[in-house]
Amino acid sequence: MTHQTRRDFLAALTATLGASAWRPASAFGQRRGAKVMTIQNVIDLIIDAIPGAPQEGSVDTVKSGDPSQPVTGIVTTFLATSAVIETAISRQANLIITHEPTFYNHLDEVDWLQDDPVYTAKRRLLEEHNLVVWRFHDYWHLHRPDGITMGALKKLGWEAYASPDELNLCLIPPTPLADLALFLKETFGSPTVRVMGDPAMTCRRVGLLLGAWGGRRQIQFLGRDDVEVLVCGEVREWETTEYVRDAVQAGFKKGLIVVGHALSEEPGMEGLVPWLQPRVPDIPVTHVPAGDPFRYV
Image (cartoon, rainbow, N blue to C red; front, side, top):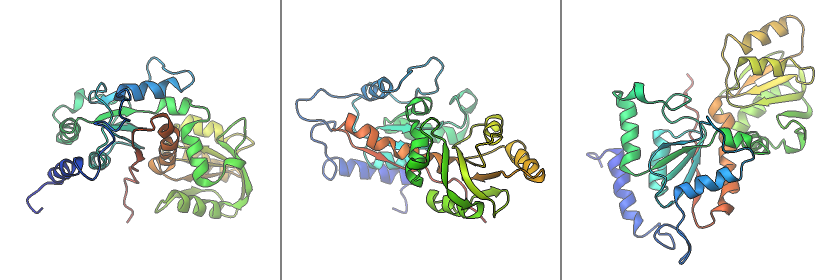
């Protein structure tokens, strides 16, 4: 293997396993005699289950590949990193359902990347293995309950604490801010979380704005009387953080806990697996976490 690239090894492994260790009931993993399901069939099935979908202008579109091909397996993930793509190849899955962009910007615009070697390598990896990447962002948030928020609530064990009328508002048992931060760090599997506010402040009313909601929406939510601490994925450091700093200085009992964008939304995409699997019972559906992109020194 010293002279093989990682991609060459995965391709060889896939070819070897294709005829033995992983072989579906028919050519594409469906019952004998059943109608072959294409990737587009899977996408349509998901969209049909979402209230209000499809929507004009949604970012939930195919980012790479031919969706008319039969589906062999499905991988869900927060983000289709190159490592996630390689894992999908090893599992003989040809559909990756990702929550966030594949090509480094919200709309997955690639005109400006045509000569970029990193983009080119990632695109080549997808094309060489006939993988389809489909984004499931707007519609998973449209689902009732919101798929991302519900995944985090289950991960935290907070389903019973969430307001029936506002899922991202939780009334938890009284907990010091410092203890709440440690609980979130451990539960989300983060090496570190960032905290603002009095560590001894007793927290009960917790808002969950996972991912990146933007400063204005985070500030408006945190400014409510029924929200004491905001748990979010990421912040612009000159927006929400400065609001919290000024609030604490003025004597308001407010707190902020930043757990990281990827780690805060990954449970929601993991929760897509049990939602989707019964709808495509003949197709393997698994989750591959993108993981925290940072190392901490």
